[in-house]
Image: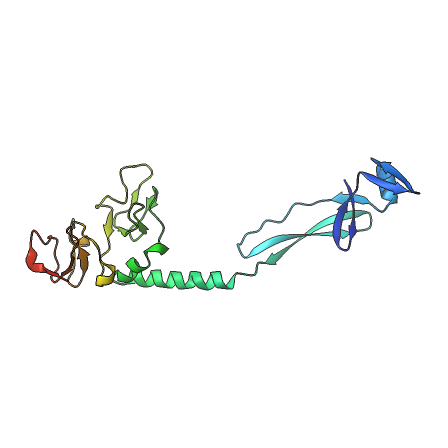
Length: 214
């Protein structure tokens, strides 16, 4: 393959050239070299080991050949994207450290929808059917066990809000890990909003004394 450099850009040999006013189709390499075209020497791009760099190709006229050279250059990060990610990570970390999951419910759109996969305790996903967030409480492999979905209450627990603005529908607790605690709200099956006034695993029908209407 023959080429030459024009203004720093590589230009490959054409299928026709004009010699002494005559158009020559499919010129020979000898004719093309007389026009300034040279053999091209391409090289393999270097391995890029980080996400902050990229391999950049550059062509140089080394005299006998048009040679490809490579260099590693730093990628200029997207400042807005970087700041947004930092803010997102900070908020999610704040939710993780707090017993009050109201903020987590408010930003539930930031969490990924559940899909079959391997999960560890503390992972948070949203139910694809209703969009509500759930927290993994038992490490498990949902790929090898297709019945182990986000709807399995021994694997995933719902979050409860301490604000009536972000209350979620009632979910029957299965133990101490997902009981309703004093100050948390929920939407009862009849559509009314109720506030828990004492830690409980019981519903308003089972033990009405620990619930009050909002």
